[in-house]
Length: 440
Ligand code: GLY
Ligand code: MN
Ligand code: MN
Image (cartoon, helix red, strand yellow):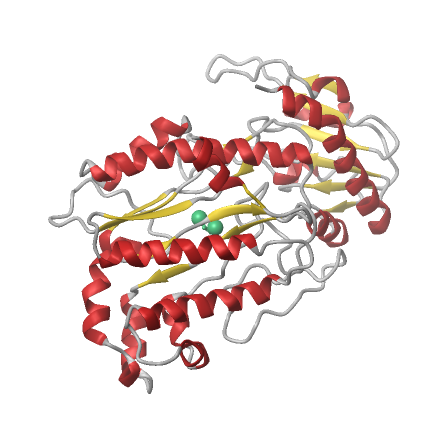
């Protein structure tokens, strides 16, 4: 099972070293210490929040729990892992490092966090990369999270290695297991809480392990884009489920949404129509594509559906021109995906950190960059019935073009989002999510 990861890992590490080497040279440093992070303790408490490792740390190796560890890299030398392995009986200490990646690191085990400086290799100009703590003040770092370094790292991580793609393929496979079980729980009349539990059990990850808080929205809850509760009550009447939930593998995320109607009704027809359009948009993902253009195309898609299903009495072009489509699709078509769910660098013009503008009227678009080989994006068009946005539309000059009776009839369904993870490839896009659904 780990064979493909073992096979691809050396080339991945080489790519990471190259990216870090170039970024360090451009920023004028001889070395970097990438700090994994420490757990954060809750206010007036002795309990910690769930630990989330520094994304730059897990870029190097598949360790997502190694708090208080460091990766130190001096270009030209084997990377050093300063591995914190306390003697503890309150919490289980991490296992000794094992697996396909270990031979590529010079591993130095420390028993106390304060032993880290003695274990870090020496360098003249050392950059620190991670969440800063006062105790690091006298460790001799030349700079803390230098912007030039971070910009270059963020810009260059958009193109994924085969190792990263394999992690994301597996994250999609796990998500799909969860989505299948979630649909069954929905069809069986489960509450949001029960559907969420079914998702977690089938994908084998707890909520702390998921890349983001799972959105499990029955009925009108789907009209809240990042609806955050898992309601224990069952609605009196069941209309629809929108579930945006996913898994991670070695710190690499998937991000998957599906929408189901409880009945074979017109809402299901709308879902089916959007599903077709969503797949067509996904097929356009390729190197050289300006993501802004595809986002604007998605607005025409939504406008066409608003027209065809008689929500709006205007031709699609005018539905876009009047910004009516913005009320139904008030988020971007998609975003970069990888070490983070909303991965960084989507609007960067260059490794120097200058940014690409967002199209007028589309401030929520997270990706304005031209895609290149092995960039991974989400394709997630949506069509929602969001009360405050509809109220604004109703109060405005375009209200007269609306078929309000029709809109009102769909409000109890909340909305639709369909989200896949797609790799841009010259040979044709790889849809990680659809492939996972096919083989599940
Ligand atoms: N799950 C958050 C998003 O789709 O962007
Ligand atoms: Mn997404
Ligand atoms: Mn999502």
